[in-house]
Length: 426
Length: 180
Image (tube, rainbow over all chains, first blue to last red; front, side, top):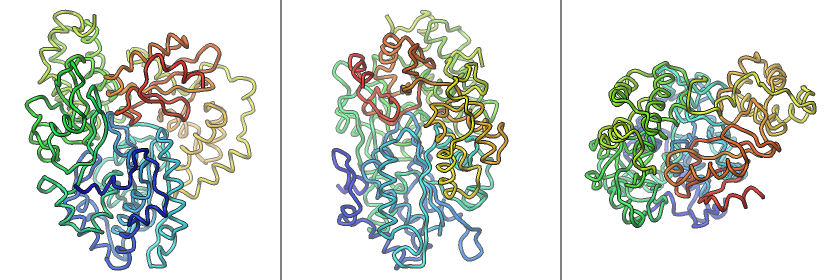
């Protein structure tokens, strides 16, 4: 099979230099787009390719771009931002792409910027990705000196500046509008929508925020066409390959580029080597901390946005966290909710107060101090921290693993409360 | 905040430090070098205040943390009020508003590391250094803080010491890392 996203990534992750990247066909899509395609034609190609956002929400990328005001009257400057604030627990795919092939992200960003006629492109990178920062800095400098960035790219009528912003750390920066506030030098609290960032984003100007993996696909679509991209996938209306990952107690944790829509079982058993000896599979959070558990009956679910949703979860980032039978599901859920409680930005009350409450209840249950009413209180939270009650998706996302843990592992929660102890601890 | 059970480390970003400022850092003015480095970042942004996160990091890189005096000086330089700047400084996990040790251990306590044995790693560090999360060792060498998922989940458990990432950790391997 073809692996466009990882074809240049070596086993030691030493990234290709500009020369090596060019020799492997790199920056051809910049030439092709700027010389022979209009911005609208690039957007049309991406629309037809069925590329959906890889940050977790799965919004169709071309449609997102379609809302950006175009033409001579459009407000300027316009911005394109690569969301490289990979902080979703269990997710390690963008790190691989940025460390292993930084020019790929830059090329994807140039072509995407051209499509919306952006003037400035930012990479919003989390501080902890030190190696990615070093390699991106070098690659951006190389791209400038190669004439792919700056004034009149390749001597043509399009100019683009690219900047790298290194964050100071907060999960909320990964939320689209929180990211915009962070980049403007504010607390990363969410903004109310509308207006959507496509119309009024960074400093009130039209802005597109796309995930790193999303952007890395764009120039391959320009090079090879929308039909080719759709053909990479096993799923309808969901084009391309996907970087899937597995962490937890499996034989070979890792990340692999596979056709969109392979099954959970194939990823877990063929690529991650199955469970470690002596351990049994109990469940998986399919796409980062903020997705519902899948259990054994879901092993043959296809990992594409529509299929995972039909199974009652979300594909999210496509990097699965595996729960084995020797790990306490209550302890794991407490760990997740403690993360969300700590990272809540405090902007709206249900999230700021509800998440710590949830974490405290779970901790009490895990430590054998649970009370009979606790499960009812947790269910109450899953309802009132769900969609529609909060400013952004952080709290609803936090409730997804909790509500599904209560559904699939309810007996374990009850055992903790009845026995006043964690059965997994001696 | 006191009744939240998940940790004393939240106090890391309280605006008013209970620690006295060490004498050596009582020279409060930004250095010329700091001013120049901050000014060099200004062109990245459409508005001056946007550089404030870079500016806080620049000050912290040289001084280890950001004191109240630093916030005041920086705010003046950036044409913000000290409170505006402090609202930003206290928001981000990696801006330290209290003194930290010479080296900062950022230990990942997110879900994949938790499954793979984060507890054992933290307990070993606590035993070895005599500090819990949010504390600094008595010799001033190490501060240990929890950090959100480091994106090293296929090599969990993981931690960072200053800028270096360590993966696939085992308690017995940690002593070697600390000595580097």
